[in-house]
Image (tube, rainbow, N blue to C red; front, top):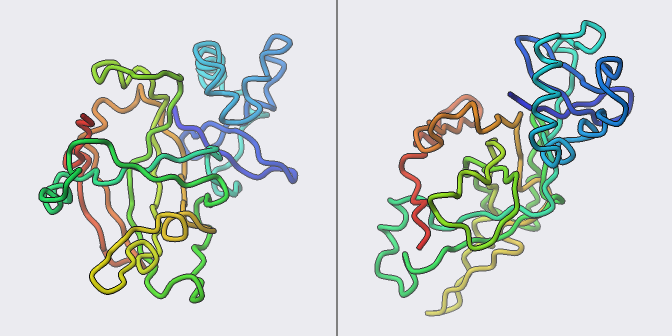
Length: 242
């Protein structure tokens, strides 16, 4: 199942991507019992709807009511969701960890920084290059894990039970703000270096976890103006957070 958010009639609507079409469940209320339409208000409502939401969506997708279908090319997509908090893993590539092997905390604790929904933009939206903020704007395409169930101190063996789905995020970085140096002293400034306007493009859609057999066998590529700048695989991620 692929979830999208798109503009229609001046509002952002939830939809499901089919072959060349988007199904808008909000237009199929005649096929739903009273109150069931609430799970389709937006992506977060759908995630919270859990098994009921999946069952209702699967039924609508099977029936494909014609009054709820839009040609894909007629829809303007936005970010598939606006997460309140984006936890971004630092040192999540094994090769990068190898480069930092001599640092005191390398491999001992999870490293992460935060981006907020204020940083999010959607497909085809521009990334702002603000020369006052940075002269070295950088991109890093990453697999984004959409959490569907809360938890705390979750065993590694059960971690994937809490995953709703996956999407793509571009970890846009003001590289000259991220790493600062003064003489022999070096420090990281992950506020202005990572969380700023348009620094978290997300999408174009969320793929539910049941469609991804193994999230650690996925290719990731980045192109800028058609030129390949990044080519890797999630198998190179170091997800063994100890």
